[in-house]
Length: 226
Length: 226
DNA sequence: CAAATATTCAAGTATATAATTGAATACTAG
DNA sequence: CTAGTATTCAATTATATACTTGAATATTTG
Image (cartoon, rainbow over all chains, first blue to last red; front, side, top):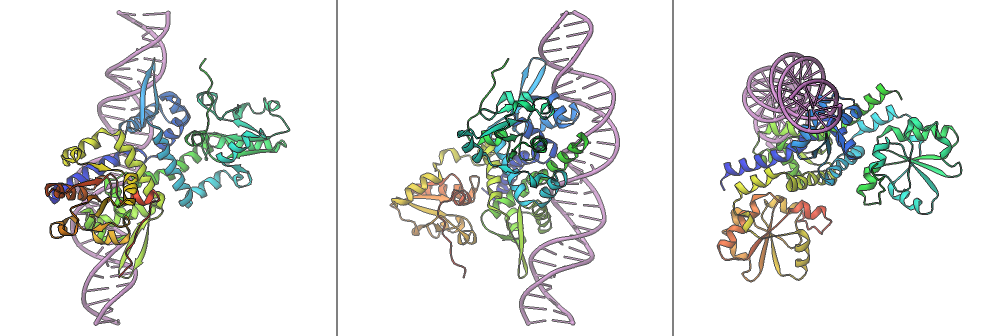
């Protein structure tokens, strides 16, 4: 193979991989991946959850689809999107963890918005798995109920933050509460923990989210559809 | 935290991660990452190896640096770039492997340029590691000598493709030859294997490249500088 | 079949990016 | 200090992308 042909090959090949890179090159699309890591969603749902217009959401999904990162299937009137492969979440996880440890700006953004985060204790998925065995903790899933139904940590109770006030009595005073959410930057668990601690409960945060638990191969519980 | 503030947080946060995604959104930059996974290189070297102008190479490196994927240090007259973290290679590896298994276009490009690839036997890094023990194979590193010196599979011999003809006698007729290169799409190993097979040698290709071997935690040998 | 609704497409505007060229900067060696 | 060299910057052009708006398409339900 001559030099010019080698260069053409290289360019065509790396440009193909760059198509996937381009799909990761928008904050809006990364957010969609994070949402789809919880469960499959319709375009409408994704638009609502990501605060984007439906048309814009649809276009981002088209780009993710053309990069083969998500798949679509028709469910009646709706188009339902999901991650094409569990490795797509792992790719996002690798990006997230690299950024988390290396990009100072990320730390700055997190601390400027979640000012009390440093004072909230957090435990890892491994630690939680150990403590599930001796039943010393109550696990609290604060995501929307549909995401809980699609998969959650075994034994976790589903109480979205908005309902926490009304359903506080469901949580035993005697046990420590571990709240979790979509991922390490999901605000919902922070809010729940702060609120519970303000009421004298012993609450802490799971460092990562449900998809990280699942990707680690830890057991997952589902609510049968109905 | 009110809704508008939550949205601002989300947008700022995901946009930060997208900066890394943007760094992966160019075939030229992915190629630079692949080259830097072999060893650190100067801007000049990278420009030559990637067939780009020095100015253009420098600009791509600037983007990679601002995404914290590479680091630069001054070595006398030269600026020497290297991957900022071993996880950067793992990120590229995750992208590469996902694309390899999911994007049909990649298969098409590889097959249209490397028409005989399918007929060339290839073995995995694990398989090679096993076979190194019983000394049944000769390992051939066909990358440029500086990349070999910076790190190679233990016991491998360094013979760049261009020198293969002159140095054929260095390779024992009695043993199987496994040639490797920068990565699964590096053409050099294919060329060496084809050339050797045409001369009756029992040669095959290592499926992945040296950085994959290294990332797997397998032993690596270095040539002391001098 | 028609109305209703979810989704996608197409056009337009503003912004961002890639690569080229030539000038400016930073460092070394004499 | 000066000449020489590697690298980076700045300005430019061509191309690509994000988001909005309004129209078009596809599917279900009555």
